[in-house]
Length: 255
Image (cartoon, rainbow, N blue to C red; front, side, top):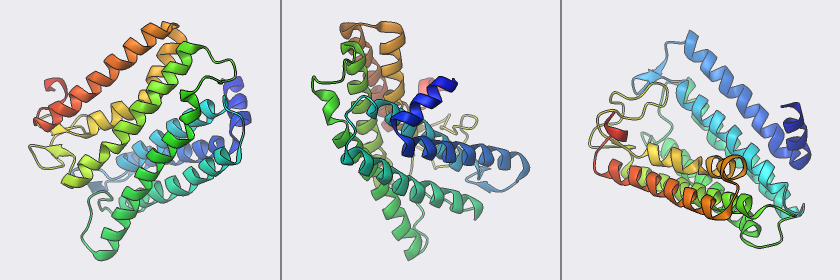
C-alpha cells in the first residue's frame, strides 16, 4: 500500500493531495452523521457530502494513476489544477448546504441558489468533457508500453465515465433523481437509492465507476483484449439497462 501511494504521488502530486483532502473530509462527514441529528430529505444531512467526497477521491486518484502513463505536459497540469477548482466548488457547496440542512441539488428556492445550482451543473459537465479531452491519447497506440488489454480497459472505463456522468443531466432536466415517486422515499442504506421506484442515480454511479471497475478487471482478472472488450461492453450494457429500468419507474433489481 505504501508503494502504491508513493507511486501515485510521483505520477500526479496535485491530484494525490486533492484525493487525500477529500478523503479526510469524507471521513469527517460520516463521523458527523453519527453525532448530528440534522437531516435532509429524510436522511442524515452528512451522507451526501460523504458520498461526494469519497467519490471525488476515487476519481482523482484513478486519473492521477492513468495520466502517469502519458508524457507529462502543461495540459495535464492544467487539467489537474482545473479539477482542484471544480471539485472544490462543487463538493464545498454540497458540504455547506448539508450544514445548513438544505438540498444542494435541484434547489432553486432563491435566485442565488438557482445560480449556484447552475454553476454546480456546469462544473460537473466541465469535469466530464475535460476528462474525455485529456484521455484522448489513450485511444492512440503510443502508451509507454501499456499492455493492450489494460489500455482497452482504460478506454472503455473512460467512455463509461463520460457517458454516465453526462447522464446526470437527465436528473437535472427532471429536477429529481427518482422516477415514479417523490425524492426522499424509502431507499437503500447510505446510498439511499429508491426501493420502490426508478432511481437515475443507479446508472450514474455504476457508469461513472466503470473508470475503476473495467481497468481493474482487465489488469488483474481478464488479461486479454477480447475478454476485456466483452466484459466492458456487457458491463456498460447492464448499466444502460439500469438506466432504462429507472425511466420505467422500476427500482434496482426489484429491491
